[in-house]
Image 1 (cartoon, rainbow, N blue to C red):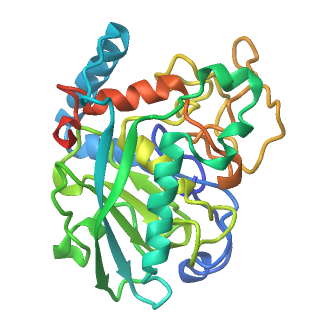
Image 2 (tube, rainbow, N blue to C red):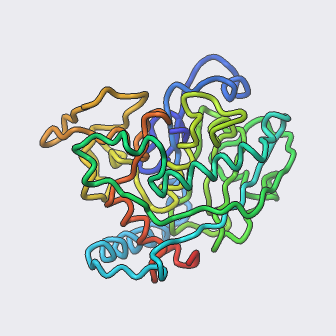
Length: 318
């Protein structure tokens, strides 16, 4: 997962906020804290399918071997183009977001994953030597599928991904990134399915008020970084704090974080973990505001590349 479940999300992503307003009203108000439900969603899936835990362990071993080997077999030019289908579920006219809003999100993904985003150069000097640079991943919008619904809000049970439950079934999920845009309940900004899950539910879910950088988006999640965060999960990145106090995000060049950071922390923000490192609060896999996250690390780039290398869990996208 920040616009994921706004609150805390274990290993993988959500944002949540609570107040006395209704779910419908909440979607119109600025979210106070980012919460991604990706980690919890993975735990839910593993509870339903115990074999998924084995698959995830195999993916982790493959990823570690890929990074350790240094012999990384990717595409001929080392890049990957990911076709995207955006599935829009709407009850109100505002929720039926415009083509311009959808394209703005594709543009943000392409900028963030190529390190051409304008704020990339805001990276503090101590982290500049571990910045990802161009991740070599691009996104191409293939289609937009729209469906009217009587549902006021959606939860994290994947119903939006199933036509039998009023949602939209995914398009070619083994070689297409499906993104569902809908009104999420409980203050959730979005969630992603990690590599290894069922193809019938594979993809990313984003709240309509946190998708893109124009139209119905609401500050402070109005720059399209919720999708950047969630696509990071979809490409096997964990939250930077490892979803535990001073936890392990499986990346060697990100500093230990006490826990998630929110808002726009003042730099330098020191951790109380071993060694008291300065935290990389501007990393896309933290929970800070859109305007305050603007980089992946080189180690995160390598983890993402492992997903689509020969033998990787998303090699079908090659």
